[in-house]
Amino acid sequence: MSITRNPFDTGGYSLAEMTQAINILPNLHSRLAQIGLFRFQGVTQRSVIIEQFEGILSLLPSVPLGGPATLGQREGRSMRSFALPWIPHDDVILPADIQGVPAIGMSDAADPLLEVMNRKLTLMRRKHAQTREYMEMNALRGIVKDGAGTTLYNYFTEFGLSQIAVDFVLGTAGTNVQGKVRTVLRSVEDNLLGESMTSVHALVSSEFFDKLISHSKTADAYKFFAATGAQPLREDMRRAFPFAGILFEEYNGSVTLSTGVTERLIPAGDGIAFPMGTFDTFTTYGGPANLLEAANTIGLPLYARQHLDEKGRWIDLMTEASILPVNKRPRIAIRLHSSN
Image 1 (cartoon, rainbow, N blue to C red):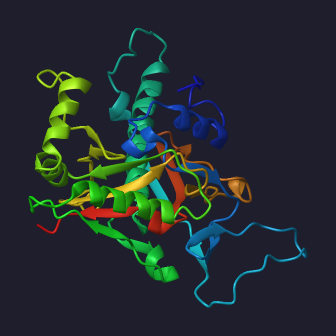
Image 2: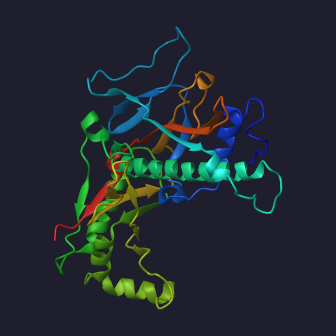
């Protein structure tokens, strides 16, 4: 943390100080965060209005009060208002957390408390990061779910669109796998709709990856890649395999929902292909905190604050995020699967 003042000082840490601290804490980066697919954009409201026109979802801009309104299409299903899901997460520092705990390499009596606060905020940040990864991975497929696994929005049904799926039929030896890959690439290109890209990436389940690299039409290419691109006896060769224009990456990420159920981010036997290097297709909108102090301000990815109990018995640590990930071109993310 970048703040070192004693939390028991008069007034404690401000919302701005705590929020700045938690947003710069080290984070266990998720895969989508690592590849930088979704960019964050703060908004000043707790909801956004999204319009669909010819397969593109766009956020309507705000205008000065009394100014001219933006013009939407007359189609009844072309415009929707979406509330930004509110995700609060709290913890508490009790006397037992710091009793008898010496500061690491320090003698200042305030340091044990700061160590505990740092540790708890780091854990809270990682939980929010895991939740965001889960929401963005589902939004990539056109669906928004909360941390309980409940579907909040389905952009396909909301706007009358259909998802594109390509069956690779990897259980059949004669399947033209290169032809399937070309179908995926063309589907992505056809649905760019004015957007640009640099490449196509595919996150696939272990089941799909194993079938892909062992298929008779790809096995030799995989052996050549393994022999020239790395040292297969020392390195894990499951991670990625470039083939015919798509980089296939095995992804076994999973999350534990608030219900206690573990859910894989990529369903067994499935995959999702999507373009990289887009300009404005994948966006996570963030609204302001549910606090008077933050009203009408531009939203941040994560907020944190602390409150000292009036009798000095504990410190409440409170975090929250209001985020809504959007794939503005839902048909650009292609579902991959194999029916046999």
